[in-house]
Amino acid sequence: MKFLFDLFPVFAFFAAYMVAEHAPAQASSLANQLLGRFGGQVIASQAPILLATLVAIIATAGQVGYLLARRRKVDKMLWISLAIIVVMGGATLLLRDTRFIRWKPTVLYWAFAVVLLVSDLLLKKNLVRTMMQEQMTLPAPIWRRLNLSWVGFFVAMGILNLYVAYSFSESVWVKFKLFGTTGLMVVFVVAQALTLSRFVQGEERK
Image (tube, rainbow, N blue to C red):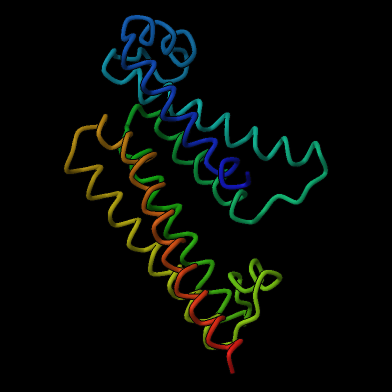
């Protein structure tokens, strides 16, 4: 359930883009009503990505607001995500420059990688261990290896996002942002689970 909650802004971004892409006239009219006063007239070709960006900002802010209203803890990663989408999404809307929103996933992935690495090396706090230690017990070297694997995954995802964003059409990148990144995340998590299950079983047999 948390996985779907975390992906809510991505689903919202994708849905808004697809709807706007299939109704260009209405999307252009709505974009100018909502955004025209801030950065000038919105051209029809930019309406889908601008509307989707606005929806993503609102969706991410809504996640934080929902958790605060229910007096639940807002993860650091979600605060980072909100800050990045507000800054880069806001720049996209004000400057009408889609490069900012294309770079947003990469900045987010690399921010996650930096947080995981710095927390481990400088603060001596393994965040992956903090999140998962209630579910399993592993030796310290394995926890560090697990943490570094997530760092590597986020770095690679950031590079892959830029490759798709600048090698393919905007529409393809939007689809990749949902289906490609989600699929790769699932594959990575499953691969880790299989690896850890073999290790845990080996420990139990000792």
